[in-house]
Image (cartoon, rainbow, N blue to C red; front, side):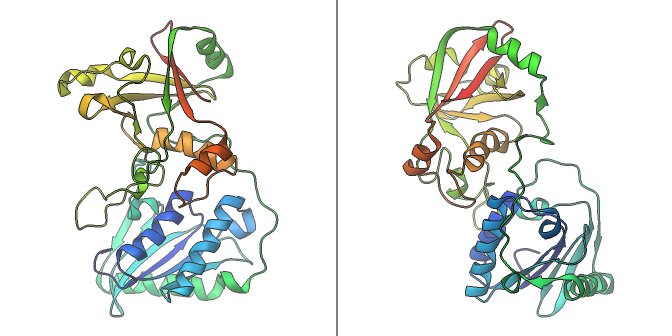
Length: 325
């Protein structure tokens, strides 16, 4: 429906960082032939991070300037529902109610198992009318509201609720740090415009279809002449390479699986979900104020961040301790 709808109405409680970015991407992909009405029912009263607020402000400016919709917030009552409707020429093509976050529709979901009800026909039209009613009763145009000047802190637990990630105790993390041995691998963080940390800006996953790379997707490129490159396991045989995955333990206590992929094992990525490693790296950049949502990682961003390498060192229990420096 995203490919054919000319209007998308959304009433949601909260909005995630990557979904904010993808909504603008969606409008641009549709060549501004899709109108978006986005109602966010919780953040104004419960709190925005500064990063989120600035991105929502920019999204609203983009929509109003291009005459492709608006962002509305709830200043009076908390709304935590999740409803979505897709229209074409004022006919509702379909609607959803349920647990799905925006990421389920714009390709940024963290592999959650969602449960929702799908409606079509008259039932879809009723859901759409409900969304419009919620927006009219509770929503105020972003542009009409006083600017937010007080923000909630950025989340410290960057990988909280991510599937395929184990959160370790401080003691377990300290043991891993103390048990490192052997040489160190330092993979450079690069500012290539459409790869590495900027995979988001590369080509979509499926040609001629809205299939975006997630904001937090990354694949770090391992240079051919990188010192100690070959101590990271890799096999040219794809089947054998499945046994070359490693578990990394980050300095802030997350354990997840990574592996090398591509020609000569040049790509270093997180297994199961490319957004895991990317969220861990880019989330730190965001929290430090070095990176804005939807903006590319440039040399200036890396310089502000002050860290230029992903550092890996093997531990005695066959994991790899991981930091940024």
